[in-house]
Length: 83
Image 1 (tube, helix red, strand yellow):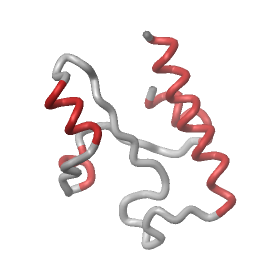
Image 2 (cartoon, rainbow, N blue to C red):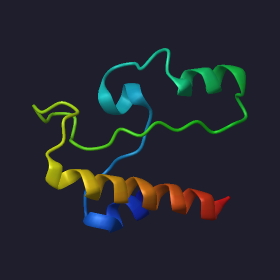
Image 3 (cartoon, helix red, strand yellow):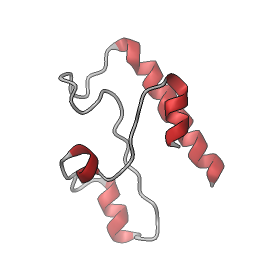
Image 4 (tube, rainbow, N blue to C red):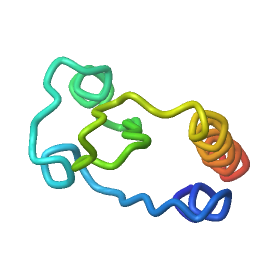
């Protein structure tokens, strides 16, 4: 999945849990609920563009919206194919 996201536009993404990668816990998310209620099911959270240290927060310029959607789509397609 990660390789397919990077292949789309060359944007570098990393994998790991929220606390390790982002430095904060994302309690109360659907990932937490799944991990608690259905521990045998893999739960994923995507943190898309821009990068964590970007001052824009979660606001993307219009020029990056389509590319971000394509990266996410390619990742989901790779996951569905692997199932």
